[in-house]
Image (cartoon, rainbow, N blue to C red):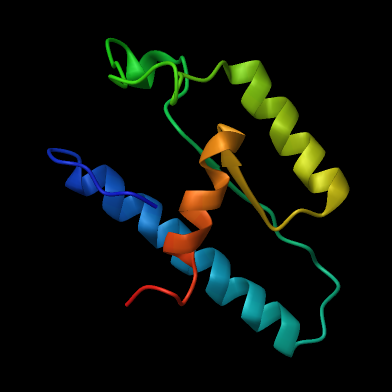
Amino acid sequence: FFSAVALSDYCASKHAVIGFHNAIKLEMKKLNSNIDFSLICPNAINTGMFDGITTGMSWLIPILEPMSVAKATVDAIKKKQELVILPKRLSPSAKIFKSDLLP
């Protein structure tokens, strides 16, 4: 949901996933499909892709462990949660950015 300096390609792909999720969900609804969708939006995960990264605020935005993200993903699917933002403490602010409250 948030953009960052020197990560324009990465941010663009994240925004594309959100747009795709919203569009495919609407298409399936129009077809009266009973398919559920879960959009999982994790912060940086402790994998090779993020080697050497620091958040600068690890007390607020920690680097996530792969197993915790996997568990949250499975839980979201089981509970039919549409949106999961990780870490969960970022959910309230990120939902504002996803909403129609902002231009």
